[in-house]
Length: 229
Figure 1: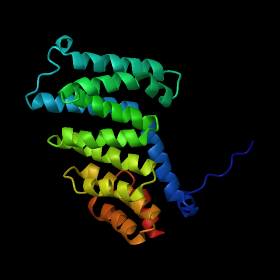
Figure 2 (figure 1 turned 60 degrees about the vertical axis):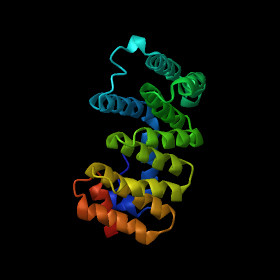
Figure 3 (figure 1 turned 180 degrees about the horizontal axis):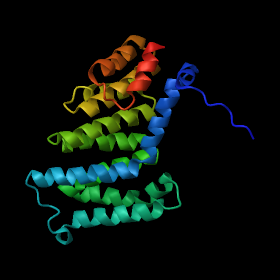
Figure 4 (figure 1 turned 90 degrees about the vertical axis):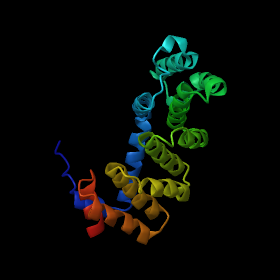
């Protein structure tokens, strides 16, 4: 069977709503990888808190909260295997609620909250995820790397809810941070979100900011072709 000729990137970009389709794929990737993101964020949190002088993981067997979190994560992974994220969420929801109710103010409880927010997000429980993420902003306001990740997660969660104005607000905050890669990603998301809101001028301004300030951005070629078209 003869293979169909591949479309050029230029042809793809000219198709209706192609840029929005790309954004959907990116969001899908984020959803599909929320578990990995959860562990990556948790690892960064642990490192940040240890560097700040905390020792809550030094003797984990003596820390009931950390032990419960460890058990809950293991249970989540077991239930996620061969099942959908919503079912895995149902299996561990009560366990995480117990941790948060009893140990929510402790450092390991804060990690549990952020981890559970990611689990809620992956299960499509966006309202619940947003509430947890917003509390996590307060938990990690002195830890910029984690704080910025939570801002990004909130932007995606609001977008999943189709609250594009709310999503834009969080991505706007993220576009002002010191970390260049985070700013580039935030501007890219702002370009998409403002396009969905019909705010063409703001969308173009975000993409142009990438072209002027973030030449090493991973999707720079796509942005160039989008703007030149």
